Image (cartoon, rainbow, N blue to C red; front, top):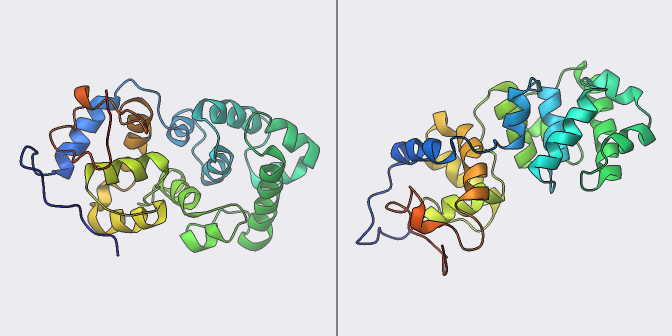
Length: 230
């Protein structure tokens, strides 16, 4: 089972999750939003759009994800419209995303399943979402959180790295981090944690040489695993 971090260092404040989110909101204000939240704010917030968008975003930069999703959704925003596209048309619309052909196959397949098995309505449980090929815990959680407004913890590389670096959890994989956060994090932060930590991880708490010297979280962060920083 994931464990809490080692005891606080002498020169660190106790970790206060409410204060952490207050600081995070200020730190990322004005930064580009994580792709799924940006798509939501641009009017592409339906469960189907969030499911498809999250699948497209896998291993694809947010900037590219936005361009690809807006191009695709200009043509097809429902399962019915998606299955009406030929495989070649859908692959062409996904140009720029990583693995466009496999993603096109997965999007067509899940669109058919939604129509045939769920009456055209995206299911709203993790198990049902992860029954679709290509949909793992992160994609399912983003669909639930952003598409349905259901509390769910979406853990990507940024969330996994940062909460372990803070010392808030100690977990070896994103999946274990998700379990740990569901145990420790108040439910009203479950959706917001991905929204805040993706831009925080891209611009401040980066993978290599994080910007610790100017980080608002420094007084609480245990800096686990940090060997060099800016």
